[in-house]
Each structure stands twice: as C-alpha cells, then as structure tokens.
Length: 147
Image (tube, rainbow, N blue to C red; front, side):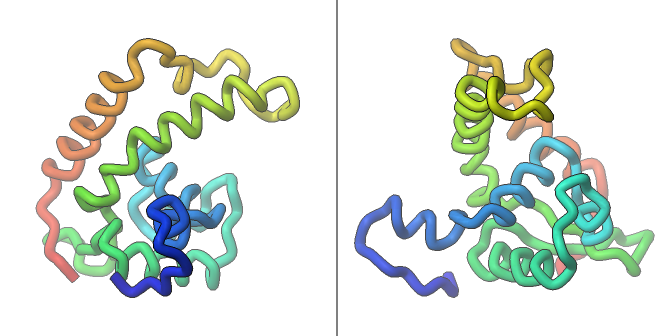
C-alpha cells in the first residue's frame, strides 16, 4: 500500500485510503452502476473533474482496491475492476446507502424515495453476497489483459 497513515486506529487508517467523497463515489459507480472506463466515470451524473478522477483511480490502483486491464479484442480502452480487496467494501457501501436512505431522504429532494436499492433491513448480507457474485460473473464474461 502506498498510503500515508495518520494513526494506529483501524477506522482512521481505512479512512486514509477510502475516506474521501470521490473515492467512495467511484467504488459505488463500479459496483452498482457498471462503470468501468475513464469515460464512464467522467460522463456520470456526479460530474467528477478529470484531474481528480485520475488521482483517485491511481490511489485505488496503488492501494490494491482496483486493477486495470484491456479487452483482448479492443486494446485501446483501459478498464478498471474491483479487486477482492475492493469487493470486500461491498457491505460498507450497502450500509452507507441504507443509512443515507433512512436518514437523508427527508432532506435530499433529489433522492428517489421509491428506490428500493437500499431498503434491505433483513437481507443486507444476502444482498451484499449477491452484488459480489453478480460483479464477478459480469467481469468473468470478458477476456481482459492486465495493464
């Protein structure tokens, strides 16, 4: 890992790696929205600046949360994928989404109140496992070359 840690606390150390807004948004986009390329991230509704996106992708790469590869049949585009370490954050993202749905929907008029993505009071563990399996299956269907 190429991170400068500021504390011996595991929570603070985790936040040193994943604690900024854009990192969590990129991870969310990869897992829930099937974003895989720089262009995918750049064109998303969150409107991340190119320079910030480049830095955040590099931080995720350097810390082993994502990997990058190319498709054998299309050597032009670089694709980013969650590693097992990145996928291990699925339950945290699900919990964060559930917390946002439960506690912020009355304050955020943009939030879709009918969206059931995070309304998982009793099935979060099964949903997390399902998301991981779905992601791995999707990635396994394409032949990638490590970059």
